[in-house]
Image 1 (cartoon, helix red, strand yellow):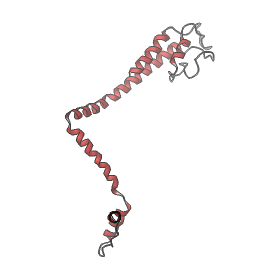
Image 2 (cartoon, helix red, strand yellow; image 1 turned 90 degrees about the horizontal axis):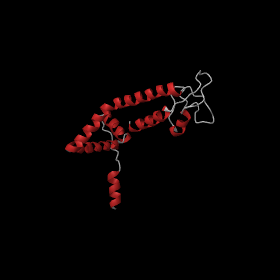
Image 3 (tube, helix red, strand yellow; image 1 turned 90 degrees about the vertical axis):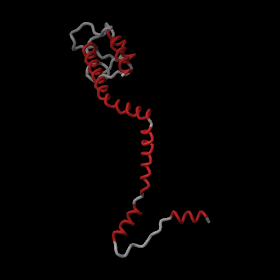
Image 4 (cartoon, one colour; image 1 turned 135 degrees about the vertical axis):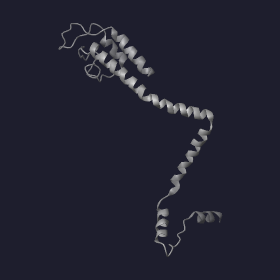
Length: 161
């Protein structure tokens, strides 16, 4: 019995349109068509209001917002670091011959600006001194022991940025 009463209270009853105003019918049809329960999402604004009342929480939120101001500078720093290391890598290691017996392939040969750094611990020994040079290069010996410093410093700096 109580269940039926609850269902009757929840059920939508159609009321006849007012005789004088067609606007009333349009509003009633619009109310039946659009479900306004999504407005309950604005209850989350209460949480934000509650957070803004606490002093320490306000300080944390202010710090979080202020950190976004420094984000473009951090991105610029990372871009400059990658650019500098790419140019150095192309100058020092760009003339080493591609060889299927070593780890040097077209993706990590420093022939282009977009060389990748994956599997750097396998690639690094292939860039050490006494490597075969590219056939288009006039140098007799390619590679450098600078590869140790180059790869380790690049991975170290990228890990902390």
